[in-house]
Length: 215
Picture (tube, rainbow, N blue to C red):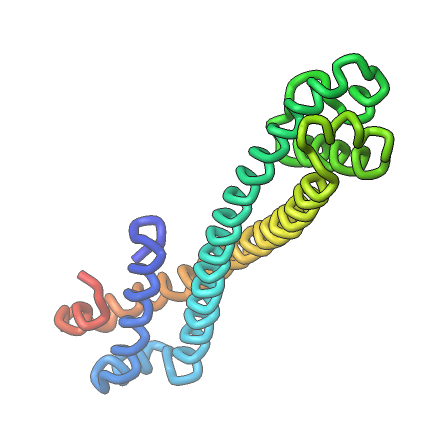
């Protein structure tokens, strides 16, 4: 019974069945006891399994939260980018002959696709407009008010928070994954040895092997 041959949920279920029946079935319990698998030894294996099961549950919770955060982040990202592109296009028209403003607001060139670089472009755009009052007459003639850019800046701040939370959670998922991998090896080693003993103990009683989930 090896994890690589089963899904993680199936493997955990099979191991759980193995421990439950090993402890609750008197014939199985007495038989493996004579081969060194006493209550203390079985408790050792059970703790290894419970630690892995706990890590798996923690991993699934983290994955669900990460998926929800990613959904929120992507939705807000699209919203921010839509407003930004509208204001950017207008700014390119408004500052067509204003070289300093075009450089200050990073109006030239393509928009970045990598999130952090894109975020920097939008952040610079907002900050430099809000920090230069002389730019307002140019923008106001095209209907852009300070409240519009302030609103965009606020949404960008919300997006930053979501991006940081997502990044932090990604690190947590990676850490849990590494712990799961190590714990899985511990469980597999214990279970592998136990199964070998069980096959010896029940060589003439295959029905007991079936109770343990073994063929």
